[in-house]
Amino acid sequence: MPAFETLLLSVDARNVATLTLNRPATHNALNATLIAELKRAADWLTGQSSLRAVVLTGAGASFCAGGDLGWMQQNMKKSRAERVAESFELALMLRALNELPMPLIGRINGPAYGGGVGMISVCDVSVAVDTGVYCLTEVRLGLLPANIAPYVVARMGEANARRTFLTAKRMNAAEARRLGLVSEVVGAEQLDAAVERELAELLQCAPGAVAATKKLVSYVDSHDLPTSMIYAADKLADAWETEEGREGIAAFFAKRAPAWRQG
Image (cartoon, rainbow, N blue to C red; front, side, top):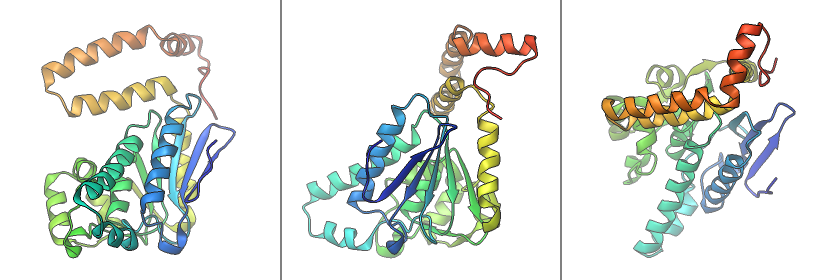
């Protein structure tokens, strides 16, 4: 397992990984080191075929305060080519998390701003504390929510994204759920139990089928219906030929639990 300066990474006996943003003194703000380490962590997680899920959370009182202002100030002194390169590193990190083959569950333990909202948006499921506040703050700084836009728009829809992007509107947890940014809102004392409920459901499912289904969702969202029909028919035929497919059907008729089921 790789070592990090700005992250904590652990894997439990169920093969569930927990990835913790660990810059609590800056409310887990994104700087060059954290961005690079998140990309490295995502690459490592992608290569671990035994993992069933990843939980993403933050240390301390906040989930992620977005871009570190000191890092942004340093970027102002760089050349355009250097700034483009820094921006692209953020884009690559978000894509790597978004495309993890296993489910990514957001344990949203506090406020999230700017890039932190983007981090929530790449999660497959997100459970948030009811005291959380969320805001796309970029336009207040004269900037754009650029690299996070594909994921936030996909999560919230164009109309909601326009309102929250263009006005830097602050959202409480209830509104964030109504807009689709987070999946569930609970009290702080219930956060871990709510995450465990999500994990319990996931651990009933075949991990290979889950990974293929994540790709299926992404594919059909970005292709027209005729193309998606061809893709889906092909992938279902593939599934029937996998060990998981054979095991799942055999277990059903034998009235026993399939090999992958936990709990």
